[in-house]
Image (cartoon, rainbow, N blue to C red; front, side, top):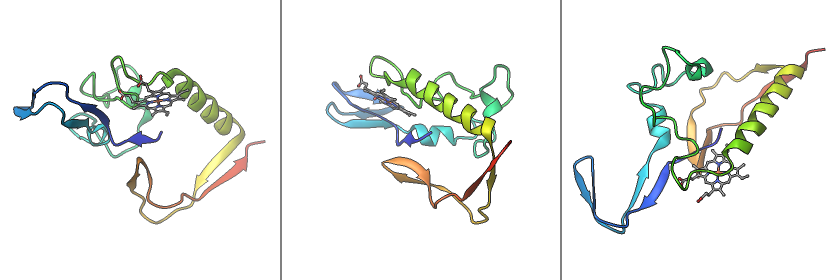
Length: 130
Ligand code: HEM
């Protein structure tokens, strides 16, 4: 899932955040990508563990507002249900028809190009399962 730098807001009044007085008119960012890589919130944060989102997982996020890819509140993403459906359909369709093999040996990390993505092209082979 492409991940934005974070959730951005312009303050409409002077606000104290984390003990700092931020003046009205300044922009603040809740850096969701950094939050997602915080070990104290996401155990084994740098590993792909989809099971962490199952109820009762020992790797679950440690805070209710730790996972905010679609933000929260009145301006949160109105397309989130469509996005979840699209991702779900795509993954199920691809996984049911192909075995995927990753051949890269080089280290890959995330880089920020407005949204985050892999630092180099990923080389995958799709093998027909039938
Ligand atoms: C993986 C896919 C997507 C992600 C990660 C995503 C994420 C986001 C985020 C973080 C915001 C900003 C919310 C905020 O500032 O509080 C946003 C806003 C928005 N998104 Fe998405 N989005 C996705 C897909 C979609 C789709 C498929 C649609 C439309 C069909 C959509 C329509 C919108 C709209 C209209 C807003 C502005 C809402 C407002 O300002 O009231 N998004 N999205």
